[in-house]
Amino acid sequence: MSICIHCDEVSFHPLFEDTDTIKAHPFCCRGCMTVFQVLHQKGLESYYDIKLTSGLMKPRSPVDTKNSQFHYLDDTEFRKEYSYEDSSQLPVMEFYLEGIHCLACLWLIEKIPEFVPGVVTAKLDLSRSVVTVTIVNGGEFREVARELNNLGYTPHALRKNQDETKLKAREEKINLIRIGIAGAAAGNIMVYAISLYGGADGSFAQYFNMLTVLFAIPVLTFCAYPFYKNAYFALKNKTLSIDIPISLALVTGGAMGIHHLISGISENYFDSLSTLVFLLLLSRYFLAMIQERGLSANDLQYFHQNESVLQESVFGSGIFEETHQKFVKAGHRLKIRPGEFIPADGIVIAG
Image 1 (cartoon, rainbow, N blue to C red):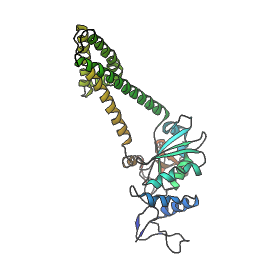
Image 2: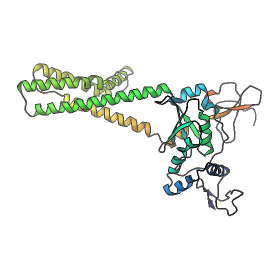
Image 3: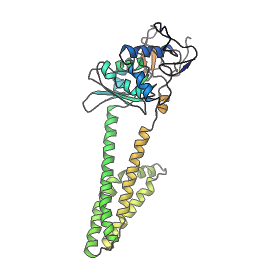
Image 4: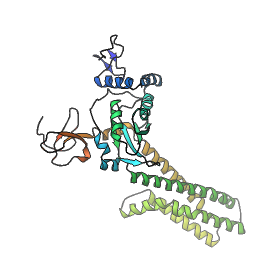
């Protein structure tokens, strides 16, 4: 029994390189042996030193050596859906990587710009096993994917196009502005409310009431707009939503506060309402961040059982070319390699 030097898998029939006469480097499969050789050819053998000193985060599976070429990554339609541009107008694509397990993987993957031409940066999110790759204009993502695959990390492109990225950034910016306005207004309103609770009367009480109304208007309109919007669509679709009672409370409390101001009553609810809006917006913002980042690598992998497929280029030619599953159409003939999932309903014509 031996432990594979690359993936730490237990093997009862280990493989050894022909030059390894003392059998110091056992491997569980040809895939792990190939990656081991690639790392040494590229001068990246420090990977194993880092792996030993950092400790494993999670077990790694033996390397799957599929000879994928990833031509589809540079197809115009595919890049339109799966890539976007950064602030420097450079193409960016994100990949979920199989086989990420420790800090040595982080070190190795972020070294890619040093030995893959055209790669500007490669940043790995270790917790999600997602690498963000930026290349030069005119560069090819297929070269990056091939190199990742050669290193034992099967890449799967994540859909994230330019329009969605811009829309998401704009939405996040507006949410932060809403939180900032609500927080600032709530703090100021609380100062005036304390004065009113402390016994301010006469013209001071009137001025303080007016100031609380002025600070509360943007909170109850612009900042609270998401609650009103969600409540409206919930009522329209005849469904229940927590935003319905929240909106009702904000509108009722705001109306009562203005009524008290007009009536000369030095008592309103704008301190509580503005604080409520601020805390709700803040909590929902953090919840959205947690949900977005909380999709673990184990959850992602089920969406990427296999993405590429061999499709006959011309019907009846017998020549099969690699393409992405999204480009498979009715009437095409496919070749399913051993261990692959069949990507669509069809008729088995051979094999």
